[in-house]
Image 1: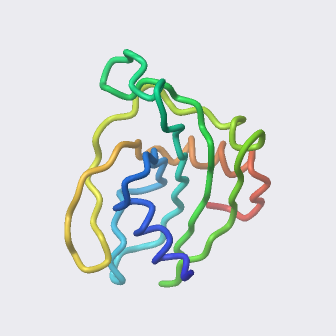
Image 2: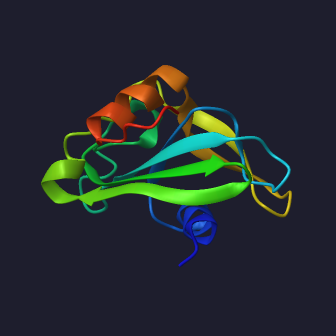
Length: 130
């Protein structure tokens, strides 16, 4: 699957994913460079867990990193199970706007924080500058 299609599918699908982005999430072809981490959150009976904001359990079951450079999207990293569990969901996650490739706008959960993206890049072994 094309990296952009995979990213769009993850953002608009029914699975719970937390977005950690270097810049505002704008997937239109005219948008600038960006690096985005997606942290997939466990589904199931403990997912509502009584946490404020309705997020419940924050166990990361999968992680992926996508990057747009020079107009092209690539997938830099993907992990599941024990490696993904090493990533933590920030406690200050909130609703953020997302612009899809066709210009449609939707909402997701995440943060825009270049420093956190740099930290996650280092943790995942991505050596190129963000």
